[in-house]
Image (cartoon, rainbow, N blue to C red; front, side, top):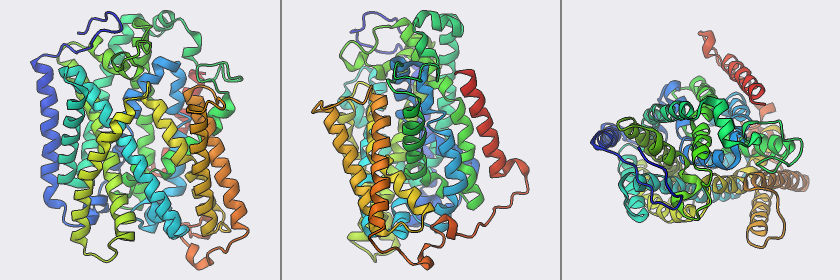
Length: 550
């Protein structure tokens, strides 16, 4: 195990042959899945949407597995050390209500429309301009977030092998490229399902061993010696809390705009549900994913607090080796014995590979269907698009290498991710909600609102970060307020422009607007598979957890 010394020391895990063997087995199995699925990639729909043939338990675990990348593991652990248990808001109020909403209200629209992507859905509801703008902005977002996962994987390779970050980034890129090219989305989804179990198996020992070493929950509170780090809501009546934002910003900025904007409109996760075998399985996908999501704070946030109790100067050294991003890797290297350390490091690698693969498969689908086919080669054969999907996978990964260096410049990965979501996803949520629930929303109203909302969010970020014109609080609080402002601007502008432009006829809105779509109920013979039963159970657990950690 690692012995913690001065904060500036170079951190290398004391792994032995058992740890390396476990990691090697993971790589072999992952690539093996890609090779096994290669022969099934006969059409573009097989490659991009798994032929819409996967059972809901697989797509459900992949739905949450695709989200368990650097954001969930390194980012949540980093921000736990920086902000405390308040970070659990990103799992509970920042995820559960939105996941239930997307299952009950939005998945029937997505799956029923047979759209290949979120931009494809926007074209049907609005127009080509809206689809094109969202496709380009989403492609940029996926490349930037893919770089985050690549950088995170490089950190683990650096910790494990002591290699330079440059070498580690290219090693991660090569591995991801091989198994996506072989098996497409199906390979990615099955690996995400495997990686989900690996992540749980790798993080659980850190939490248990770490808590025992510091004397349990009460011992951890005593060692950290900051009461505000152990409450969710108790200090949010004002801005006097680690986030620097009150409950209004948390509920509306995070719980509504950032959360719904991500889970309801981000094609990275929606794509997993679209791969389900039927409409009922697509609706169950986010609901199945909600249950592990409820309990992941205990695996990703508590280790960040534990390492803070023994390294109070974490984040103050000025180097990546001592940045908040290293909280989880350092905790694993410090607490886990050989063998278990290999499992933990494999879990980290699995999470980053999962997140990066999810972004790359979403990118190659949007590029091929919504940019390349729409604007460059409209009537090519199916094999041509399958070929293009494989080529753009390589291009996307090479571009992600560049964005990995952008991610490396941020003290906390989570701060970077939330900044991106407040720019790209927040205004998009307003566009979706108005389009789905107000039939008067016009094609040009949707486009102008989305464009202006995105530009306003970018301007706010630049004004705060580089011009220092104002401050919206901590990095986390700033993202919440910026997301809320961008959403509001898009919402208002869309309504105003819609009153002065022509809307689509009713015939074209059937299946796209909630009030104009026949409510085809999914009949489930098994009671516990019914969407409302699953949603009710998840909501009950959500309320109980918020009360317990108030």
